[in-house]
Image 1: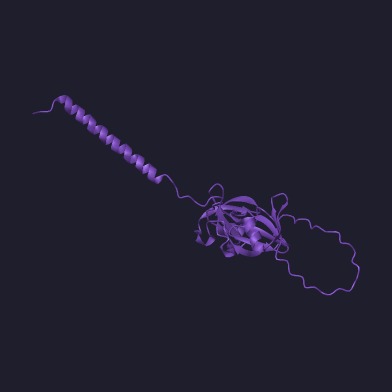
Image 2: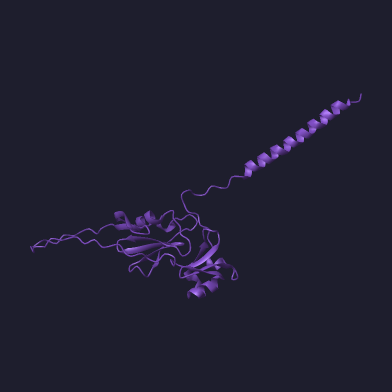
Length: 220
């Protein structure tokens, strides 16, 4: 027996609605499965890294000379403009997402040292005393430079603890630096490492920094 024309129309409409519903559900599931990106460590500044030796010789990047942007140059050209070897340039990604090269700490020179506090000492009266062994002090004062002045973190802290207190979870970009003091030693964070200086001018590497997690594996 033939199906009435009205039933054929109803069946066709039902089949069409079923197809549309299946398509909508598939789109919903696809979006739900791929929308979330992997969560990175919270509280850390994530910095994309580009090492100088991994760059193509013809790759152009934003070049800074004496703190001033001078244009798009290759790494070798930027080094020549700065009068430095390519290894002396910090390379990384700036806040705009562009690749940047700049001499270490060129955008943040060392600040003036904190004033030395001198205590009044009463006159000493000579008297015979027996020598006493004095235990060495386990630490020194740890200070952070805030950009305008020095803030004390601790009056007695070990050097490794001071480095972690100053810089753990913090990364800087090419040309930038963060300064601190441990005792009479100037500390500065630059891309990829913490440096130390006894004269606030000549710096050498103290410890390396993981530039992806902004931590210090060598310090434990």
